Length: 438
Image 1 (tube, rainbow, N blue to C red):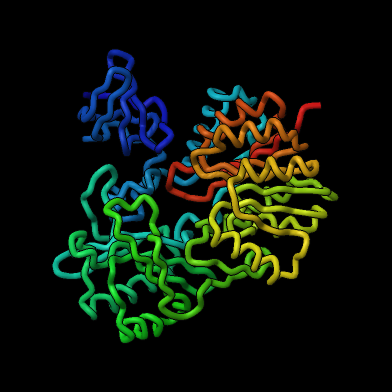
Image 2 (image 1 turned 120 degrees about the vertical axis):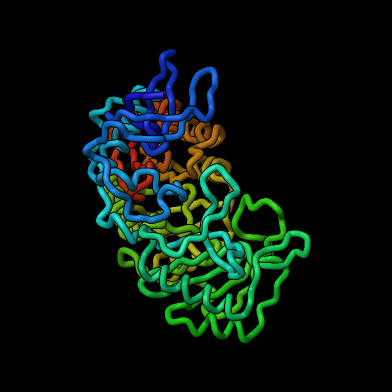
């Protein structure tokens, strides 16, 4: 079948229409191109197709920098010029906000582009498998269980790539194997992250015991300052970490500096994956919060980087987070930076917010939920609590738009600032400012 690609989809795929006006999703195709495709999945309301040939090429198409681009699928827009990537992402955000929330697109500011197209990720989680007799790390091909060994990734920071190769060299020197579900032994996933030349590694495994010689050789790797093992025996890994955590060597947490703050990250705590763009993101948030507030609440506060950076803007700030390790981290970070008007509590965001909003008026609520957005209890709590303003940090335009549609009952959207955290992917972060209607 020959098709013309009319627009781009939310996952970076091209969309054409067949003779029945049914949308056909084509991975790797670009808007404006004429393509030859093979239908791979036909449903009543849509179809999916494999790109066979590009008959008329877009001027925005370029050769991807990654040799695994077609097999991996993680960087769905790497074959597109970066400036055009930003336009696609802006348009996806714009369409979602109009479709689900009837938001005036004039409220959307230009995308704040990433200062780095490549080598921006400070972390990776890669599965481990045997390949040609050696333990290797790689990825699973999109939508399959087919493992692809990966020896380099252009979006990961250079230091990560060096550390990864040295870790794998030590593991293979000691004949470490991949996970055997029946034996409950072997290595499953390698997780590494780093800031300013200091790295933390966690190896997800079965009931393996790491010999002192292996630990010592790993800790001898330059820059590796924190080493952990996590025992995960479940067949399916919904969460990367198991219940048993073993500190093997070095520091228990990973120290780094961020926007004038001295922060520490425990192994299970989350931080933005693009360190440089995280600064831009937090600057945007800070710019939306007025000075001289009495009380600010941040829901889904993580290790507290946003709340701590706002400590001069309120007499009291409370961060709410359901991951206990992150809460401990955040309170330690407050102490480390001698900030005494910010504290963090562990619990469900909606329940804790309701408790605090009954106690006193919330001037500003900051929310940074997962990609699924705010759930119904949280939305109901916000509408009942009637805080003066909301700063909503989102990583999913569709769930953001649906949430804004609900919040529009009591709030007016003042502005929306897109921030590109992940070049070459279809993902876009946004920061939205809402003010309560008078």
